[in-house]
Length: 639
Image (cartoon, rainbow, N blue to C red):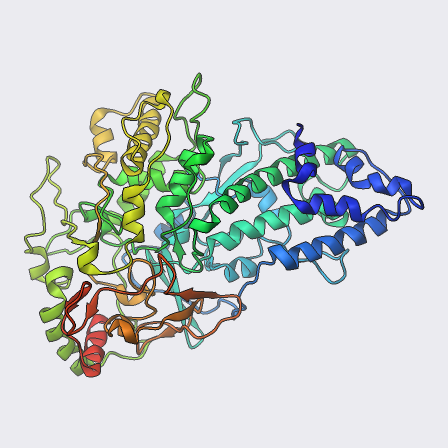
């Protein structure tokens, strides 16, 4: 069955609805019944009913939009008066980090299309244009920060090399035959935070983003559909891509490309729908990153649908500072080698990867390994020590000229409580000699580097939601023998596959990367992958700037985290950016278009890490009085 026939046969009901609605009572206007079918075949039909077809198409598309594909987003004040805190990066370093191309092709469309598509909405006057999808104010409503030198793209978006179809063939402009440009997200998209307070915006480099990835992808899919279905919108799109005097053949070729892109969108949507019963909504500030990476690599790139699983364990984006010096990273302490962590992230957000054309360039990818190494070094800095501390990206200090000043007397009381109840797991503050004298600093390796041991706490003991740790430990993948991967267990299989992808890049350089440089770029660490039923603890410096809390983001602020589970909010809204300096977190009152976080759902539990006098799993210390909680909150602001 051909590509267009597949779309018309039911990949989406909207295509059938449009054709049916456009009959205009066939006996009176027989030619109009064939308008859309003929148009999809690239023929130009000019009839008196063309305008009526557009009206009918818009009406049905609008109904489809409102009933099934409306993308509701919050309304925010414009992002102005932006402030960066001193985190030991120059302006040039952070701007490079924001837009460094990692080889990702997150949106499955070229950069030029991204700039030309309109927003997933329909004007009441259907012939009029709506705003562009790439409008920075619109992307800001999805959580992507517009404060950047690159005025065309928000933080975390990067233009790359030539764009290709999933088949590997180049994606070219139908008129000029020039290669289109790749576009994808970088690690800055998920790991750059932002908070607002009384009209001022503070950007937190290496912090926790408040983005909504699912709504971004869904909105782009709807935009593609509306562009294809509504003639006037397609004409505007064609003018932007092809130029105003493009031929009918050029436009027909562009429509064929749109059909391919829409077909890919519906194919992915069908997979999402097939696992919907296993999934929970991620919402703002969260992503089931490890499962999404597995879906991209082992289901999409490998073309193996049975490897696709639901998004059952979303996690709050982690803070980046200091993590390069931990022996293992991720919330469950699962990944040892930095290059595997970073290249796996790039593959997970859409870097091109060949796993099916085994006769040529197996494991070839668009991953920019050299750039990943440079990003890692920029964040890590040199070996931390008691004299100089951490020399790469540093955690932010409480901005006393923006937020209310810290009550130093209350913070002093909190310091005593921290020493009694928190320090045994989270260690002394990183600014102290005691931190660098901790026995959790491991002996130096062959490269003279020392790493901080990631202490793991059993999921039953800590009592927080177990879904993230359990899903990674339980997941299996189906793999063909030609990949030469020795296990079907998800974590180790992913580690082996990513290592093969990176090694392919090393081998293809001229001359090939030396063994010494490979070891250095790999972080002088083994490719250790584990799936413990446990969660990692880490130092708390800068934690005040990274709400919400717990690994799954199920507690909105630190005061609630220090309170008994029974007193924590059962539901709250995510998406607010206004900071609450008293409780240390975002405001969580109702926000139209935001995300209602329901802690009763699997994967969303807000239990554990509890101070209580009850003898039960998840209790880590005695119940704290409200005054003690306030003192600890005040002290945590100083870290």
